[in-house]
Picture 1 (cartoon, protein in one colour):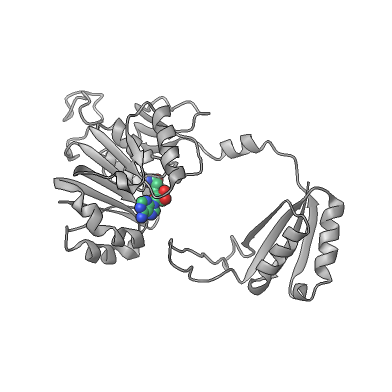
Picture 2 (cartoon, rainbow, N blue to C red):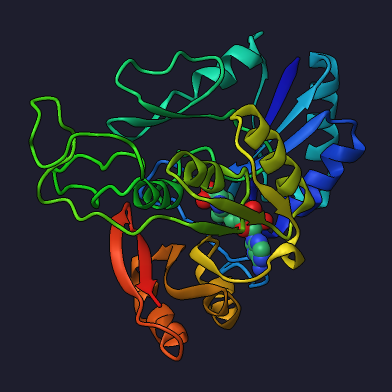
Length: 327
Ligand SMILES: C[S@@+](CC[C@H](N)C(=O)[O-])C[C@H]1O[C@@H](n2cnc3c(N)ncnc32)[C@H](O)[C@@H]1O
């Protein structure tokens, strides 16, 4: 296969992409032409909210063709169009044959949550020190353990202290570990606080189901996992089965009754909207755990939840924070 690489200014990207489609490109991808340079522009947006900007100043448009002749013909035809005046053909080049499965797999290594708790793709052996393992392959639903928001939730579930405190994690609730340094092999430090049991857990916005499965591994008594995306629900069910975990998964109307632990790793805007619903589901004395929040959004989240509980920042990683409350 051959790729045709073009540069296009923001106002021509869509026209050029549509033209490439019409010229039988097998795929068209658009990237920031200034990525990995000081001029790179991050375009973060939240669901339901307009992105801060419609596109990058300059885009690199990469299209794939079956043959060199087709790629050259497309370049020639595009270059003759008025709208192409501010665009540029950068290259037409052969795409090297790759083992895409192997390449994709090589990008997903086991992820350490705590020294004893790991997320491990099925094509890897778990590390020898792992006593708790979630088996998970990347799929369509969010949640492979590689994102800081997921990792912070999992650390909380594992009863681990926040990153950088230099203290190792608690064992699963109910596990028969020696405590208080009574054994040379103890992994439980004297200083680590023991949380309440997870009890009945709600994973709201379950994605791949990774938090729900993590909760099961750390002693949850029952788990409901819900998502607005039906594909996420299916993914959660499949991943739970692969991990021999029993849970209920479904759309948000599956939520019922009160839960000792409510987990929601979504994003700040939906979390604010969901404040009354999520808080109403936490049993008295139970825990609310929220993620998907940037450091600078802490105060707006505290304000949105103030009528129901006092949120506090419990962990932080790479600009993201974990906020928790006891109700
Ligand atoms: C960032 S992913 C988190 C996935 C997983 N829980 C994790 O921690 O990795 C957020 C998930 O929330 C779902 N979601 C977004 N808005 C939602 C809403 N209003 N109600 C329920 N689920 C929602 C999305 O479909 C997505 O699967």
